[in-house]
Image (cartoon, rainbow, N blue to C red; front, side, top):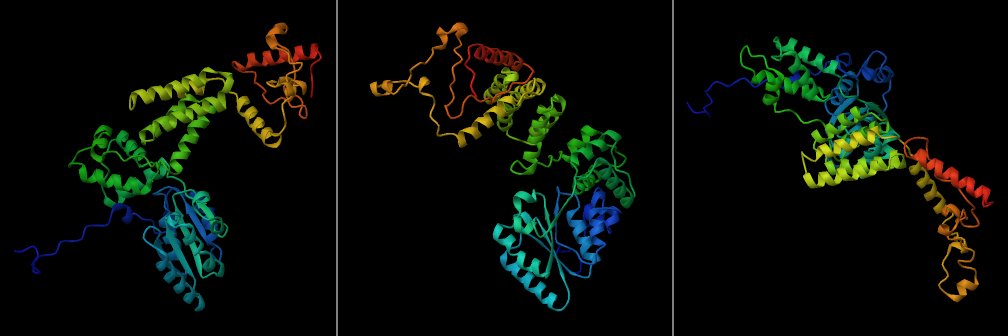
Length: 438
């Protein structure tokens, strides 16, 4: 019988994906967003009001943004329209807005859900403003990117941003238990493999259910997979990490703060996560060099040497061998004495240069290559420090209009403790020789 014979029996359509079958039917069933959807959650309180303002849902993939938007749409009398910024353009938006205005004229509102709203350009985002202002459209936009950077200020001023969090391990475990009840069979994993699966999901509810579905398909009857076998079966899902967006900046920021806070263990954890996600190791190495300058400075001058050497070592060895050199530099800077005295002093010098940058240095420290300049006093009375007692003249090098200033204040830690002694000693010599100024 031909495959195209109309008389052949038709196969049953495959069931929807597990994530779709377990999609919550009410806000109370939404997992992991209790700060929004719980009894006293911000969103629960908003929905108790007769009117609903525009909102932006910001959170990682699989945190429930689309689900919550659909549940709100189902619970309200407004017409619910869903579009994706990836597939929609100006023409489709115009049709939606025209239909919303027509409904508005008949006394019905429109709840417009725009997924991936950050994909719209600035002009497209501005097109929402007139229909939002008239009340023809109540907007719910969903984005995985930071709205402060990706959405127009005018749009943000008309909408409340609600933050969706990555699902906790407990919330992901609850999803697995719901899936087991629905399918009426346990997930064929031992306890360690189950924890591994939850870790692979990286806080993504959709991912944990997709991975669980793969496990059920792959396991043979009676087989219980261990962690190593699980990784082979599902080929390990890469962590959520967009090197051009928030994941990139969040993790390097976390690494920097761990170094500043002298926590080498946490610093290594974030470093390993970035390596694992495919971050450019030279980008990390350059940031470690910056950490050595900004947060350690002269408290340990070797920190900059070590950080720069690690960068060169990686450049020479490549991955994965060179990654260990960067890890060593991270531990070194994390355990080094900390000081931002140099960072603050240079910032103060830059600010002073901008406001007082036109002042001429004192003539005493300027060379006099011509007779005219000699007659004008250039270089006159300059004291050659090597000829002065203790190789220190104590003369004033600042412009006359400014007088001596103090910008660098070393801390009492590490090598800067020695620098503080030197500065105090020179200040005492100036005072003894009557060369103080202010």
